[in-house]
Amino acid sequence: MEFTIDGQDLVQFLADTFGLSDTEVQPFTDVFETEFPGGFEGTITFEADGRYSASFDGEQDSGEWTLNGSIMTLISIMPGEGPVMLTVITLNSSSLVVQLRETESFLHLLFHLSNHFSGDFDDYDTNEELSIIVVSTFSKQ
Image (cartoon, rainbow, N blue to C red):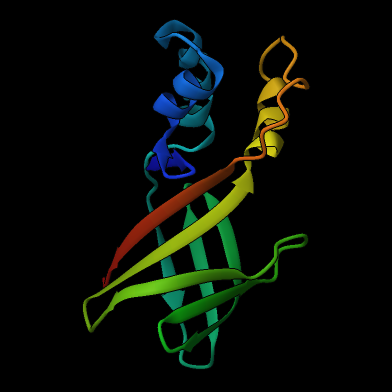
């Protein structure tokens, strides 16, 4: 996974914006690598009646799916889960490649990260946008 903030690499953004050294940036990158592992293994089964079931890294999920043009929507039956909108990059008889894009304010992220570190993040008033883009490739079994 690659992380960018306002189109800039995460490490470079932290160094430029907050004047952090490589040593000071390292705890942030460690949290990202822990919170967002670089990959996962699992299966997802799409039924013709619009239902799906999935298992990723031991987590089970199921719900309904729709495909409208290049937008696939997964609606989980799990409590508290909202719809997931995926952009279909490739769909053929042997594979499915989808992209998930999420954005979050960097101030919200700093608040989340402050739970992992001692320090005061409240004096930062910059509201940058963090984009997380995940591309997943599924092969027909």
